[in-house]
Length: 234
Image 1 (cartoon, rainbow, N blue to C red):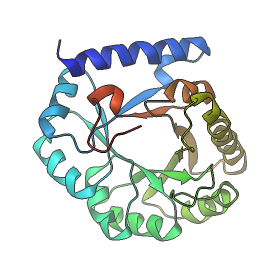
Image 2 (image 1 turned 90 degrees about the horizontal axis):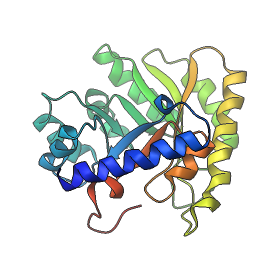
Image 3 (image 1 turned 30 degrees about the horizontal axis):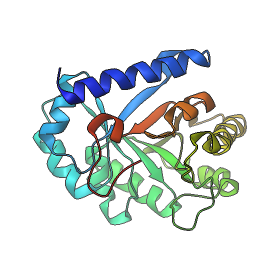
Image 4 (image 1 turned 90 degrees about the vertical axis):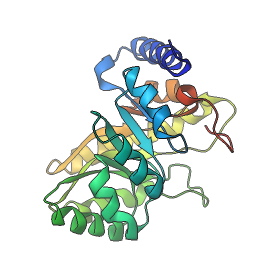
């Protein structure tokens, strides 16, 4: 067993225990292995160990990496801040974009997706901690943004994403995860048409078990899969 395969085995066990502890269906939680900065060959090791969903933060890196691995049955998610001028690359590569935070970006994704006859799945990034250093929409503004975005025929809003403030104690992140879940429920009640709200992207290496308890469906985990990258990682 390779180190990455061993890491994945241990991580899956932790995820399974966390899901069972709160009485959830294991099939409702998926691991997005954050492969940013790691080379294609390292990702290939994870694929060989059964991982099939990967998250990338940088468009140029993703273009090269996905081309190398294009023959493999892998789903690619974009989880970083997306510039509007990179929307065309994004819709060609990614099955799900986690970080839509403006009408301008949504409009451009819709336009680029229409060019290739694709309905691009997206999540709305919510700045639950209201931190100036992080992207995302204020929770109060999310319903209005969704009402604007849902008129676009070539994007499909699948749910919400958040990156809470960092805490040494992961339990302190729970209120931010729980707030995202509550916001998702609110939107589902108010927007029953063309807004599925089936995904909650939240939880990283240090706090994913808390995120599962709060209802996460997509866990964005890098370090626990691939080890530490240059500059560190959560």
